[in-house]
Image 1 (tube, rainbow, N blue to C red):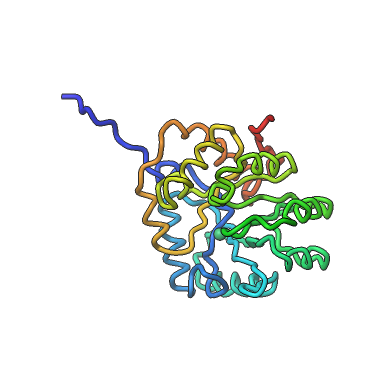
Image 2 (cartoon, rainbow, N blue to C red):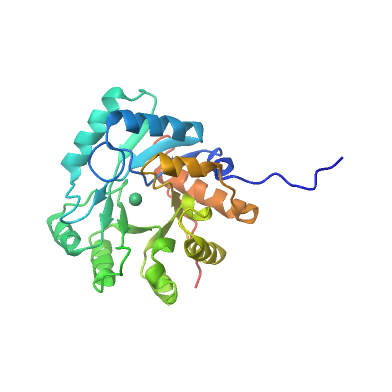
Length: 257
Ligand SMILES: [Fe+2]
C-alpha cells in the first residue's frame, strides 16, 4: 500500500550535497563558539558527516567584546590544526561587526577577509547602526565585497523591508543561515528568510555553527520547494570559496530590481 506520507526533506539532505561553509565559530577559545580544541574537533567531525566539505571559520570581531585580529585568529587556527585530521580543509576569515571600531580597522587596513576580497559583516541584533551604509560604501571603495551575515535575523527591519533592498542595491551580498530554514530562530526569522528566498536576494549560505545545539537541528525538516534555489547557493559557495577548484567567480545574483 502506498504511504500517504511523503518523506520529509531534512536540512541534512541539503548539506549532503557538499557544503563549502563560509560562516562558523569552530575555532577554539576566541569567541562565543567552541571553547576548546576537543569541542572543535567533535563539532567538525559531526559537520563532515552532514556533508560539510570545507570550512572557513569566522570568529566574531566586535569592539570591546571580541577584539580579535588576524594574529589571534591565525593562532587559534594553528592550535586546532595540530590536532585536526590532515585532510580537513579549513581556513579562516572573520565575522566583523559593523560598529565604530570597524570603521577604524578599515582605515588601518585591519580587516580579515574570508578569501580574496570578500568580507563577512554583521549588524547588531538591536538596531542597524545609522552609519552602516556609509561604512559599507567605504569598505567597497577600499576594494572589498561585503557579505551581510544572516539578514533574516535582523528583525528590527521586519517592517522596513526596503532597507534590505537598499543594502542589495548598495552592493552588499547576502548570506542566509541554514538554521533559518528551520524554526530554530522562530517564525518571524523563517518568514523573512522565505521572503528573501522568493525574491532571490541571497548569494551564499552558511552554517553559523557555534555549538552542539546547532548541529542537532540538521535533522529538522525544511521546505522542499526551496531545494533548487538552495542548491544554486551551494554552487555559489563552492565556485567562489572552494580551495579545491579554481573556477572563476560565478556568483549568480538573482536579485534584479
Ligand atoms: Fe556568526
